[in-house]
Length: 162
Ligand code: FES
Ligand code: FES
Image 1 (cartoon, protein in one colour):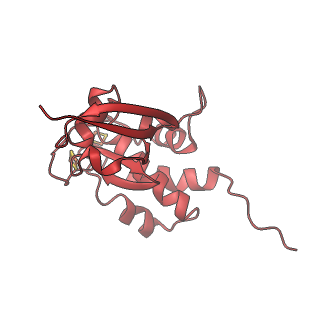
Image 2: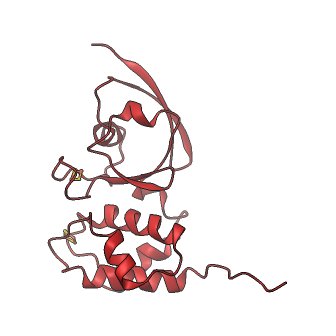
């Protein structure tokens, strides 16, 4: 089988892996132990496999690993700082937005991408950001509340008047 080398940064760590040119990013990440990247529909519809590539949400079931050569990938495993959960993770727990948890990694990463570009989103913007992440358990209300609460908690510094 033809193989190639893939160099990426995952959750801040440099990785070099041997892959096949046709390997999907989803398969490579799970093979390397990132089980927070969930295998759902494998058709780009459910969002369970969402990871951030250079800060943008990507359905890892839809792209070849080779396409992210040199890229910076964030999976749910990289979100907490040691024992300290990200405000989004805390808010999802506090608001009962995690039930079976299957959709949760993808949903939190999609929400992180939103808050990184829009620290104070409206409810509509949150719903739009989560639109590609299916959840069969929560009815979406609690995840939306959690994202809004996390935005409030994140304490993004406001610009100081000069
Ligand atoms: S598994 Fe990738 S979108 Fe469903
Ligand atoms: S918590 Fe079960 S699918 Fe969302």
